[in-house]
Image (cartoon, rainbow, N blue to C red; front, side, top):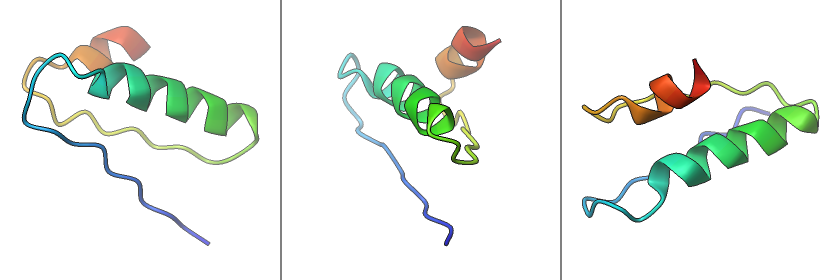
Amino acid sequence: MTKIIAIFNQAGGVAKTTLTQNLGYHLALRKHNVLLIDMDPQGSLTIFMG
């Protein structure tokens, strides 16, 4: 079954990108298919993940 997890908060510096990156990484380690979509104008997740 497909599940969608959205992480959002208007405030900056609350670890949204770090949480998203680590959650995606650990779900992938457990053999889940993971798609991370970076909607942040700064594009930090895209930069971190390469």
